[in-house]
Image (cartoon, rainbow, N blue to C red; front, side, top):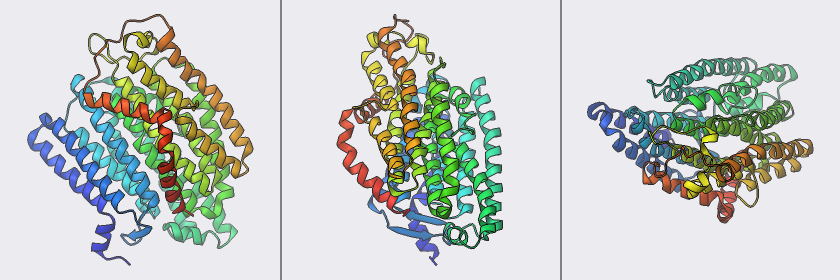
Length: 484
């Protein structure tokens, strides 16, 4: 049993984030909305300090808060990815919020609180701490979705997200109660041990697991719990959509790994069927649904659904190679998606209004060749075309499926990749080969930091990214090893 001081030391990242969020909030209250830029950089510095603490101190496995919290290589890896996504989402939002007159100091504070919830999620060692982290993340996310309150689309997106999110939370909580009722504990290790007690207990726990999986599937926008994604991505402010597509999704997927491979490791044959169905459905619907889209944010929403289908292939493998492939995929997906949304943020017309329609991007390869090239790299990398780095993400999950003798799933994944390549290539064709629409105005990119992030993300997704494959592979194998 850890003491209070030991628990505070082990949970230092969460403690620092919580204290930092309160400090930023108080500064914002006294300074007002004029403090947005300062608070945004303060949040980024806070994320950097927490990241350094995590990287410098990666424990083998340490429990805290009466075993409700676990710090291990998996949580450390996921937290670093979450911090990257959160920091980028704070920085890229500043010029956008100022341009649309929604520059309020609460934005970086909400991002920090949402990040705190995600940290609790990926370090959850109990269904109770899982739920607390999930709700802390969700409550902040609902406000972020409706952050531009003067815009009808943003308000509608926030309301849709809240209603459907409340439904998913109810399903998850009902599943938690069923698992507790049949197993007698909410602790992950106790659940894993209790599932071997008898078939009646396993059947009851399986019903609870179905509800838990449904709740988590909503957070990662896996089919059939994807219905909120296109509308929320289109209606929410673009920086918020970029945030939703990256950090929360990565956190929920990390939690998915821990619940499936830790708490319910004795029921792989049961939950694997559910995961395979969601994987195939997400790959197919994400690929087919994006074909008819005319709004690039909706297209990226279907792209995220499609990519989650590929990530679930690695989870369905239910082995160390599969978990490692999932973690590698998430790291590459984070950069590809952030880069794509950064490019969308850099698009504006002569009035300064955002340009989101695909047809309005025609001829961008002539007027803004560097931006069009970067966007093409992100699209082709999301499609998984070699020699771009996104190819390695899909290759890793396909190899894991083959190793687990899930040949049909790997083959379906390849076919879904071919279908999805159509709409990614269509974007490239519009950028470089369609007659110019002359809608996007050059030089409307906002802060120089956004341009720097686009360049860094493009280099990462290019063949140069393969230079990072060694350290990334070592980190993912170490993180996955903490589950086995």
